[in-house]
Image 1: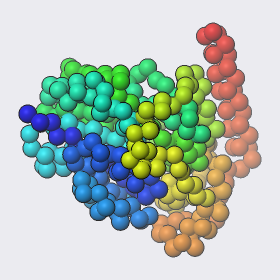
Image 2: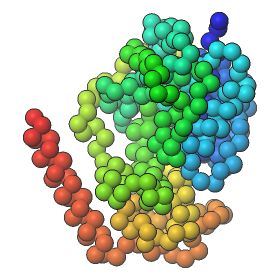
Image 3: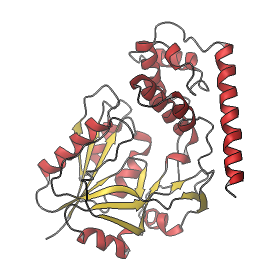
Length: 329
């Protein structure tokens, strides 16, 4: 029986990278299901250009990975009968161009229903000729057997992983993660994650400051190597622009943070590592653009005493990390 390849992805204001993602994904997927969460940046005008794309509405106003994953899974099962492989990819994750020619790809397509498929997901760096390599593969695919999915609100595994399900790790198929090619976008994401977790109470302050540090060296402690030319060359031969990246002064994640400020005030977030951004300038920019839900009063930044405490904490963490690395030699 033929395996239908269904790629599912959540989108919120990803117009800057959507063309690359959809151009690549259309080469190997039978269907691409996008859950669009109230995009306002032109993302919705891009979907109709790709015949394999089906857009479904994600009307949530909150960040909720569980809700969008369940929405996408239900849509797959409604639209695609028979044998199906679900690949859960974000818009900044690109299947390597040589993937479908590798023996591992055939193994994936022949895997038994109920199998969790795991791939290495190298982080492409800036400039994009180097990447961080990992030994632990990511669960990004599932040969669907209708199993229930129990996702988390944030940092959730994207596909069903039933207890006792077989796992297939495919060493020769890579999924390139392009998030670190744009450090300013990554910092905006980390600020938003910190604010979400502070609001929801899902991570302690120590974990938020270390996990979402805006000056974090992602390569530290990992193996860094060259990007394999064959991961990219095949897509470029098809005319897909793989290495151009746009930047702007503020990102949609920044305006989401401002909306949290409007609802909860700023004091709740004084100890989080989010104050590298000029939030008052961001607020004024958003007001000029007519964005809704932003604070009406100027942003109140942390007082000097709080800033001193957080700098002391970060310094102590940095020293402890260096000591740990030295002892591990």
